Length: 338
Length: 246
Ligand SMILES: Cc1ncc(C[n+]2csc(CCOP(=O)(O)OP(=O)(O)O)c2C)c(N)n1
Ligand SMILES: [Mg+2]
Image (cartoon, rainbow over all chains, first blue to last red; front, top):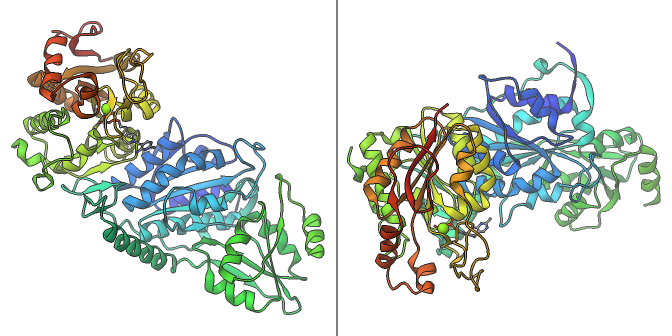
């Protein structure tokens, strides 16, 4: 049945559809509706309004190890706090989903105007080398669909998958029939705590035994982790490419900015990455090869543009939509000026 | 069950220095678990970071070695996900009471069913001997070279500020009592906190002039006595249990 729902509600519905049975979070606008939606569903799921974002992600890690599909949600200030747990979950290979509904930063910034300023934080916010899978939906329907896929990718990669929303999308209301969206759900793979002898640790370890001074083993472990992440990510190549044969310019945009620039499809080609990280190298290279100019439109000062430039090894232009307000007119003018 | 079943012997020797107090608490925990006859399939041990935090990896059960200060929220997630598991937190004073202090406040308030064993050696042992929130006033450490200017944190006060509570203070000298209160903490439904007065010879004691771990151990023998019953708060030199069940 069709109903009018907002992005945050669709995330909550997607999580339930994916089989999530543990949720912990700390309130923050514009992410709180995800919490509100899940607060009254015990005993179907365990729900914790935790003391802070650090606690909530670590609770989700514990719950995941104990056998449940788990999720936590927040916005930029809380995402900064969650980075510690994200690193731990990568090291311990714990599947879980972390939702970041972006708002203008740094710090408390412009509460609670929308932004897309946590792109690099999503990819590199915790210390050390790791390769997270990051998905960015661009409609209410996609919020539902890609929340489920985030859980699937988490199970397959045994890692914390990040779902990036922005304040606009989170509060955007659209009429959708969620039941009509077919998405397969991957079952749990990790055997729950209570098997007897396993040791999960944030230290470099082999079969549960710390190997903290073993450079050769670190390199072997890292190569294995990288291969595992890339192999899993290969099954989640979500994007949309609309070529406009009369345009020599390709616009790359994601989330709400894609929604806004999609009105320019008569004048430009459009590429919407949903899987933001690992960056869709082959797909972007192929699309870029067909265009003289590449422009990334994003609500930050060129974070994703830098990533794409790195991959394409050619100049990539950018339109930075800053300060929490997005206007098609302004974007159109800036595009003309490039 | 034999206490030996709860220890990963292939991981011995431990990382702990000769004369360290943590081994005693580890072993008494194994004794308590054996006494309760808990099968490994019903047990999980969670630690944070620190010398004490290495304990999780030495228990022969599924275990988690979390980040610094986060043993309690990881344990709470586990317990809520699978209430049939007995979840034990074994970690240090800096970890549980310093960086993890906020979680201690709130897990205690929620009265989540965990047994928390806190090695109180009054110092950040693993990082070389910096002042902990539990360092006695006046004691010299690497970060309090003129003696700590502050009174140690009142852990008993924090735990017992919750209406329903269970707090025990034990010591690594009084091992029979230590084992008994660990057993009680594991059995008790709800949040149970055991503060174990311990010591660190290499990164604390030597700087204070102690020659050996044993010499530090005798300060626990002379400094603490057992208080019978569970009425009222424990005095500074008292070991025992404080509880309120409704
Ligand atoms: C976030 C973070 N900050 C600091 C450290 C460094 N560190 C490791 S152990 C430790 C102190 C541990 O003290 P305590 O919990 O009392 O354990 P002990 O070694 O005394 O048993 C610190 C500060 C860390 N690992 N992580
Ligand atoms: Mg200590």
